[in-house]
Length: 108
Image (cartoon, rainbow, N blue to C red; front, side, top):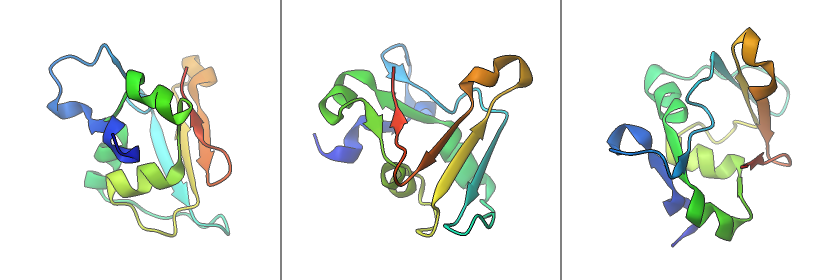
């Protein structure tokens, strides 16, 4: 399997039990460039991020982490995105996370 084949769109899956969906319950998702300037995303790009599903079996081959470039390519985001911040609902604050070129998304 190539690097990006373990990321799929959860809207096309019948059963997501063997997939990790890190953005599914996000209250909001923000992106910014290297200077911290916000990069607006259209609705399609935001839905693509929210519906990312990661095959947990194949993710192990990639050290259980997803890079920012994986997400940029899969969701057709602008190449100047340097940070993705996922904000959770207030009662789930521990689920908020930031992904940068140096800080990958670690899967549990």
